[in-house]
Image (cartoon, rainbow, N blue to C red; front, side):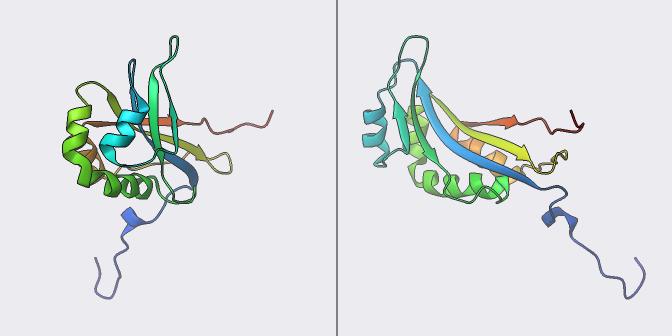
Length: 142
């Protein structure tokens, strides 16, 4: 780098724009959502008991705006869950814990999404899988 040139940290600048929504979900075939609510001492945003060919689910949504970075959504939920890590470790023996991340690219472009290694590490530490649903961009006009 020449003297007088400034370096630019591109890791914090978005390469493409996208919208995303993130939900923390606890699910199992015999899940009793009210027991999860009691164990975590938190009210879910949505819960459903198990049904025919459908597991029971307890879910908590990120409260951030859909234009926020995916990592920020996950970190927001992890901040609420970290104090409950011992209870989550108990739960993961009988249930699946996941961060469900839905991503929609804007303007028909391909969205490049970096998942912060710290986010991956914390999710792994808690036994939470990251599940990404990427909506295919509309690259060609019909």
